[in-house]
Image (tube, rainbow, N blue to C red; front, side):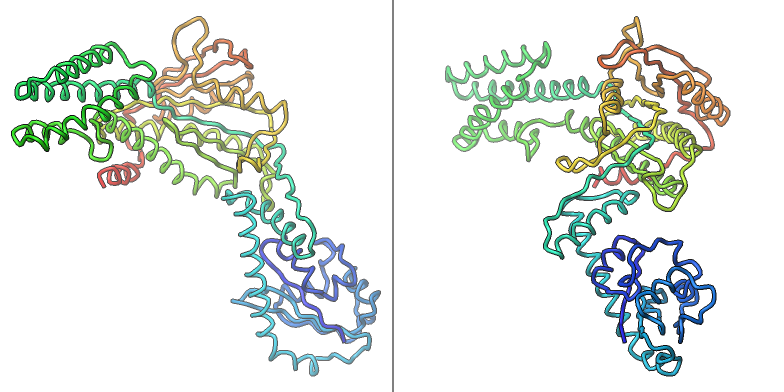
Length: 521
């Protein structure tokens, strides 16, 4: 009598590589079966009914499938198969087979019923261990993986695990998804560089003016020429910084304040009790952890953080429903604002049929979320010390591309020379100007939709009209041409104005409340 075992798992890769260990009677007879081969077989009968199947003589079985023919060819005439059930689900099959017809019958095979739970527990433990090993390989080789494409990484990791079990040198296979449609969006803080420089400049001026006052006060107590020389240098630094902040100015002034002013004040504070209150006034104005005045810069950075967190939280919240509509790959980056990539297509999924209606749906969904984001940021301004504006942009690309997982960077990137152009355009359009003007394409309270083909403009103008009817967008629509960009020319854009006073719409106030609460904490 032969004994065999096979395992089932939600991910076929685990089951497939598990077959190297399970030693199924059926797969020992022939291991190149496809799913259709099981249709109408005794194995399908078992899986549907979740009950043992006993065939006393396969020769007499009517309507034999390729499965039963393969068993007969391997010398099995009499077979009993029983489901291994764990938490109400079939996780495997126990097989008993013999070349003698009638030896395994309902009575004799029934004796195995008592031991089935032990086999079920054992198979579940092995499957769990295999899944743990595969997760470890994913973390080791690929780092954190988006749930939509996780199945592909599980297959690659299972292959690595199989090679390691057999003592072979494991080779990480390329992870490539072909013919996927990109959807790119960006919400950039307008004038972030100049706002940051202004905040730094104002803090440095306040710091130098306060230092100048304290040095002057000390001079009234200590008539020392060196103090007068230091006061002179403080005034020179003030005069320079008020004209504008140049590269290296911040570092130079901070070194002067921390390296000379602070040690000087500490010395006189310890030496003369009369000077202590004057110097403590300066110390109390400094940020405890940084040792300098950090008021304007702090307000700016808190505002940037709040904007990024508000947008990211909202997009994460919306992604839950969007993934249910159709699974897709989504990645998001935070800088001075938020940018994100979405990829969707047939190659990304295993059990869904892709249709271009999903691409159109996500393009409209993206426009709606941008309107929502703009209104959230408008509400956020009331809760931050430094209100900032955002400008939003969409890049339309109608041709499918390929993306490849870059092992060195642990992230996806476009694949192929032709697709690189898309990436180049994506990195340059946010700084683009309208042709023959000095006006930036991206503007606060507006969405710029960059496109290259007339059919793309036609599609998006339909969405714009719809969103105008719902109150998301104002009637103002501009059709503009972009200046020539390095590596890209002939690009055009639709620029639409967002209605920031739309009524009866939920703009995710809960998200804003959570962000403000975290800032206060």
